[in-house]
Image 1 (cartoon, rainbow, N blue to C red):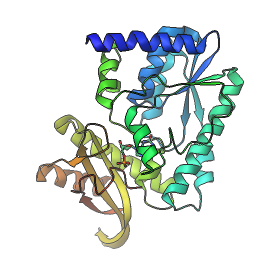
Image 2 (image 1 turned 30 degrees about the vertical axis):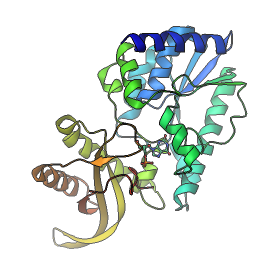
Image 3 (image 1 turned 60 degrees about the vertical axis):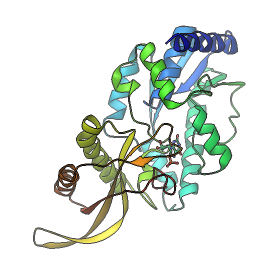
Image 4 (image 1 turned 180 degrees about the horizontal axis):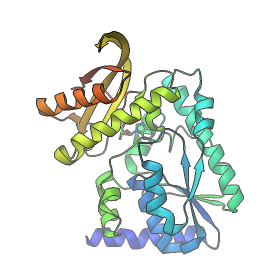
Length: 305
Ligand code: XMP
């Protein structure tokens, strides 16, 4: 705890010193990293901080509403950019190109908003494992390697760059952030797009969003996974009512991990898996089949793209 308190003090001083009199923007994602950064900065520099939330249309169910509610007191700006992202992704099925498209679109929209606000500093919630994975070239993570040069900003401040996720959560608790945020599962920058293999559409994103919500509802409280998710991994034949359906195959994944670099699948009770399968197939008309992924990382990554 003493270390946490010291960290908070040091991080606030760093933000204050780096910002000076300038305005600072942060992209809020609803995840614990950017939320902690915003909370630190709000304490350090007050209304010099401009939090911006870009709704990419690729967010989890209810995320935008949650963010509006959680950050309205620090004046969060919500940008509705779902159509823009879908248009940019149209026709693209290569995983890394999808990531790059999202990363570029994101930063352009963000720069546009930042320019309007007159901010010249960027505050980012990059944590230690983000840096290692990008240097290692495993996937181009959107908040570091996959992002185009941050041309519009004079200064980039990354106060969490030496922390692991569990340390960020300790800081979140010490700052008094709600448990819903402090213990929020990690969610990738490119959002639900990495949970649909191949080309995305409004329909496939809506389906995977619903499937993710069901998986979270059934598993989070009971298993406290480091991360759990659902992905659309292909199509398979099924029968629903009197009709054959060449529907979506949903793969469910639940893992424990310290930092996302390695991960172990969780042994979910069969009755819970079965309940997830029946809910998903009953509640989502387009899904014909549900499977559970038992692969550790490595060799499989946590996300599907
Ligand atoms: P993988 O799939 O590489 O994921 O095993 C490790 C952790 O990182 C998250 N992840 C991402 N986070 N941008 C992010 O900000 C990304 O492009 C990205 N891809 C994966 C993933 O959810 C897991 O927590």
